[in-house]
Image (tube, rainbow, N blue to C red; front, side, top):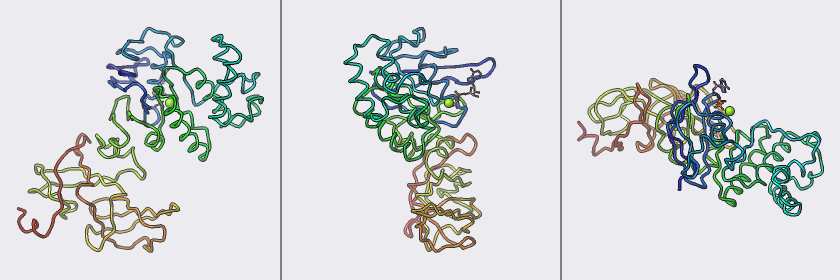
Length: 361
Ligand SMILES: Nc1ncnc2c1ncn2[C@@H]1O[C@H](COP(=O)(O)OP(=O)(O)O)[C@@H](O)[C@H]1O
Ligand SMILES: [Mg+2]
């Protein structure tokens, strides 16, 4: 059954269209990430799911039923925000237990739920403290705990890890994934961080300018980005783009044949990921224009007539800026885009070998 379905969902504030017609169906139990740059409408979308904003048009369905007119308190959701609002006069335990107390859950059951949540979130030693005695990260975990104990049908999380330091963030990423696996509830997670989306989600909805750019698994959006926006947003470093040309069955970059291609003649944008670029003795000539050591490897910026690509090299790479190198990429690893619309183009690509080199037109 569809856990969440959005039908032509719109949101307008005054004269500004913030969400511009989103259609989406996610199965029950999914970990859906709404991923996109700041201001693209993610929080607005999440707030509509929560019932905190009314759609200007379109429908929201939970488990097959339209919830547009159901108030937040009756949607069986729990929401965690980036800015957590804890009750300052209550202890951590009381803050976490609050939704259960409000619902009239008996003391013993409440305490057991708080103990479970505290253990998952590493808050057991802090249960008697008050919010002002906690770090920002600890406060955020209390806010998560408060959502957790409610065991809602759907969890809505708006950038919940963005105030945490890097170590705690990566720890909490794994905790949230484990939690999702354990409880099997639908989670909708808003982030602008593609790494979070790629590591945590079962499904990713990439959003830009209030429009859905692509919906798929993390592997799908990485391997087959639907357009240039998705291609450059997913993966680090982002995909590089170069101006290519299709001429009589060959894909050319700066006049140099790169692959055999089944596509009509004309310009094409070629997308190349750093992880697919190989420094070799032959191939496209380029100059090393920048080097960035990132610990376990070095990122090389390679520039030439074709434009600029990024390549990964070992940490002990001996090249220096200004050096001339050659690079290659396997034709199957190339991504093609329409230069005007930025949409993905699909075409069969195959290597140029010495045998077909002579027979190719
Ligand atoms: N209540 C509001 N009134 C007017 N504009 C709003 C309101 N809420 C959000 N916006 C605007 O809508 C756009 C999307 O905001 P938001 O959904 O918060 O984006 P994101 O969460 O992706 O950063 C922004 O340009 C923001 O200024
Ligand atoms: Mg936001």
